Image (cartoon, rainbow, N blue to C red):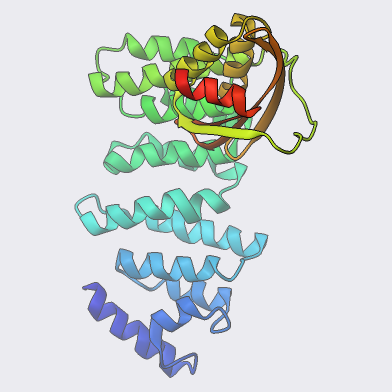
Length: 315
């Protein structure tokens, strides 16, 4: 059955029940139409993956309860058990289901079944999506499954990334072991190397105290210089500041700022105050870091017009 054919049937059924004459589209857009339980009942009878995903989306727009979510999980797991690997549309939409509704609702009691599916080669490219589900569960049993997945050539990249985000023991050694695995592709090994580098930076950051950290408000009249930088770009700017300052910003201050940048979680910010000497005069350099991207950091520098003008010449 095509999605178009099934949509016509579902639209007719919604009209027959007196829910709406606007069909699935109206149910998705208007949360006052139809309850979570009614949509769950409808979900069990649709066949096409696209209809399934639309109705699931409509259910979550209605803020399902914990009890509702338990029912949702059972319906999703039933669909996964019946997965047809030859159906490309099914594969595409099930990936969205796994990464969104399933990950949002799954509970610790489902770890064993998630693990069974994840190691079933019948699920092919979908297998990696289940490492994200285990990451969301975060229990000791889920972490053990991720460690087991890190030894699998197909799952290693995504499993190791999940473990690095959870900052679990053994992740460094598991990354190093994966890099020696001849069955893992060069492209995947490159991703694992990046995960390993980021993890090591975060571990170093956890060992550094931030002696220049401040909650002080900045005085008015300061000039700002800002840029969005990756780790290499950040280091270059910090070294320029070091060269510009006669004292107050040395290698240890560079380590402090870089460590803070490595340790920032998404949407976190941090502020430093450095008392520096530039061309024989006392200056205050304010440094703010903001993380809105896992691959880069927003660096904002504040200081006197003279200080920022010097920085702009060198940066």
